[in-house]
Amino acid sequence: MTLSDLANRLELRVHTTGAPLDRPVGGGYASDLLSDVIGHARKDELWVTMQVHPNIVAVAVLKELAGIVLVGGRLPAEETLAKAEQEKIPILGTPLGTFELAGRLYALGIKGS
Image (cartoon, rainbow, N blue to C red; front, side):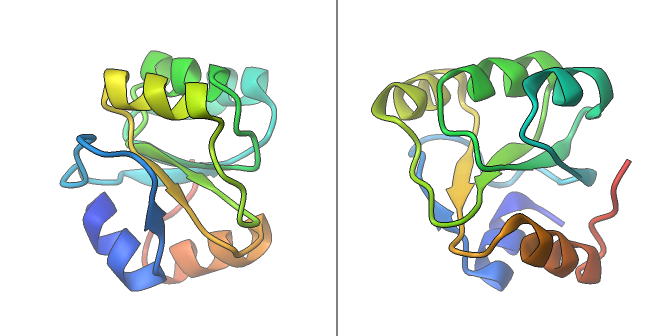
């Protein structure tokens, strides 16, 4: 399943422009600790977090993640959005909480690592 498929099925808001949404999602990872994501997330996973600062983009690039979903209606900081667009890292958003979104992703076949 691609990011575009997930965005449509889960009514995710796409915050970035120019970042590819045709990338396949190979799994999911939910964490708000950057060091945890660095240590455990895998390439092509979708990262679910409440963090909105620019460092999330650096972590996504480092780990070659498929994209980032911000939960709880949070919006990325302007600097975060600019960096994500520069690095071609999709940032999406949802009003859902982490637990609810993780359950919906799992129901769609997106498994954790």
